[in-house]
Length: 200
Image 1 (spheres, one colour):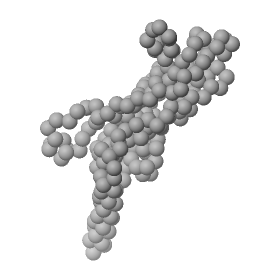
Image 2 (spheres, rainbow, N blue to C red; image 1 turned 60 degrees about the vertical axis):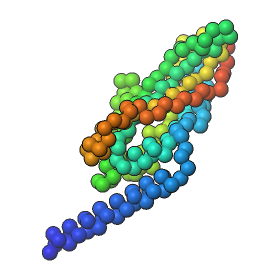
Image 3 (cartoon, one colour; image 1 turned 45 degrees about the horizontal axis):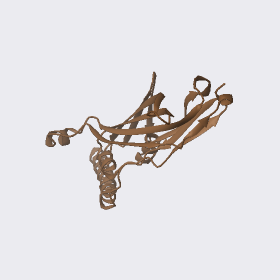
Image 4 (cartoon, one colour; image 1 turned 90 degrees about the vertical axis):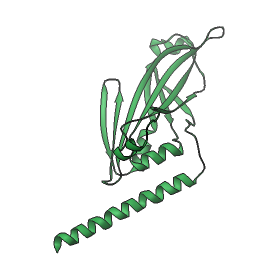
């Protein structure tokens, strides 16, 4: 009898969580179709250091996939360019950050991993909202030291890409072809001037 009672409570809990995710999916699907975008790229100069902050707004399709438990990989390219009047913009330096998302909506498990150069970190989250807030934001990223740069006009270009990771078995069986890269969006910061005094 005790086992039957536990099984009943488990079934009720499972039904409750499935209902929540079903409602969430309907809300997302019924809303307007917004494409992925980077609203703005902000820079902050402190001493000789350049810091970059930005955020990514995901499109409805990506949010629906995450809600279904489809793992995602977000790749951020944070690149510094120098502006030339008679020549194309010159790439100076950059960083690549990879954030992988793994979701199990049944077990209520939300995990993320980040690769930034040689730094590899893993995190667990209490819900989808906190996981997405972490995955879609770049906060006070130290990009470079001005002492390494020549005087001139510069800007930051941030590119965000979304890739499919491992799909759930049922979906993987039903879908015969799915593009690896789902979207790629970019945004430039305002230009800023680096004079000789700041570069020293």
